[in-house]
Image (cartoon, rainbow, N blue to C red; front, side, top):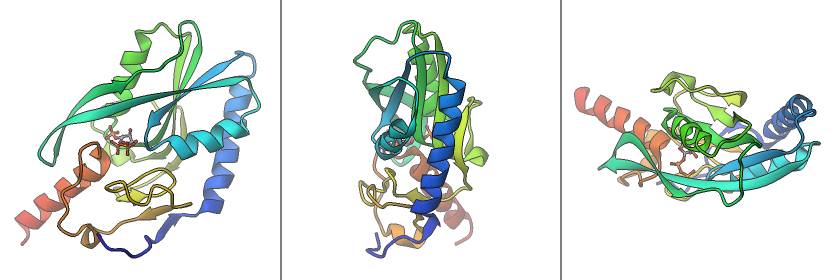
Length: 205
Ligand code: PRP
């Protein structure tokens, strides 16, 4: 991968403004519900979750959950595996799942189904980035920071091969920057783009 700094897709300033707006909206809509349990999906959501949680004006607690996808080579099967469950009891509590990105929707769909089995009072979903045109399953996203196209994005928690997670903004990586690396496991959004690009290059050499 190139060592160049990824070009800006969404600036740190614009992210800050949007996170403020989301926090205000969520605080308003949960004002009469009491405590909300924010469940951050590791790893990508950790920066968004930290910023969002600190801007809320309602009682909240923090949990984390980790998943990975089953894959065959560079192709995601869409199946998701639980790596780490929440620690606290979420029964009869209001849950807000916090994602950095929803791409195919498989991860969020799996998480909603899995967390429903814990008996929460409600489950809503929040993501910083939403790739609507990449959806493979129909999953409701209640709070969306930014709708983006079919782009390969890094920064503000999102990585490519564990690089660029701590960029303060959302940047884009171009296909030419991927070098000869095979996308690692657990990179469904980037991997699916990689696969589509590979397919395109194969059919149009
Ligand atoms: C990303 C992101 C979501 C998931 C979305 O995680 O954090 O959890 O992909 O993709 P989907 O909608 O196609 O299921 P990733 O697998 O890259 O792991 P990471 O958060 O640990 O980087």
